[in-house]
Length: 115
Image 1 (cartoon, rainbow, N blue to C red):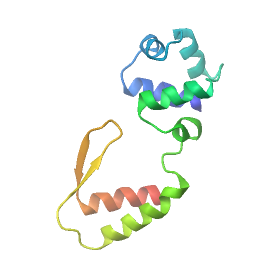
Image 2 (cartoon, helix red, strand yellow):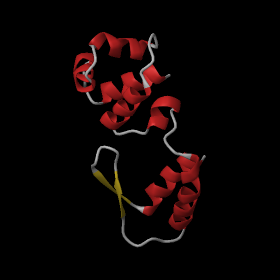
Image 3 (cartoon, helix red, strand yellow):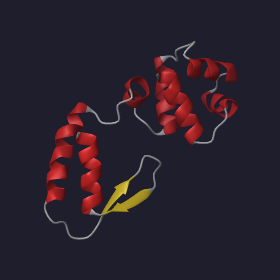
Image 4 (cartoon, helix red, strand yellow):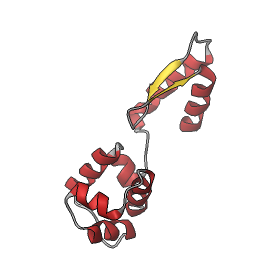
């Protein structure tokens, strides 16, 4: 699973294994072995990967995008979207870009996250 997430994130950034290897200071064959699950990266390498791709180590290791402690905050935010909000909200994306969303779109996104 970790290898599949590394491969997915690398492809989303349109990076070759060689380019990722150079960014991490390792060989391209090491990247290939990570992606195939034939070798596990060290904890330090997992942190480097998370920083490079702009994701959490929890996402890399377990596939989780929301931490359990964040759920209450998300529930409160969802409750706010059920009330009428004036204007739009601006969300900061993982890649640093910003996205403007209305209350309805935010409510649908949060509902999907909260299940």
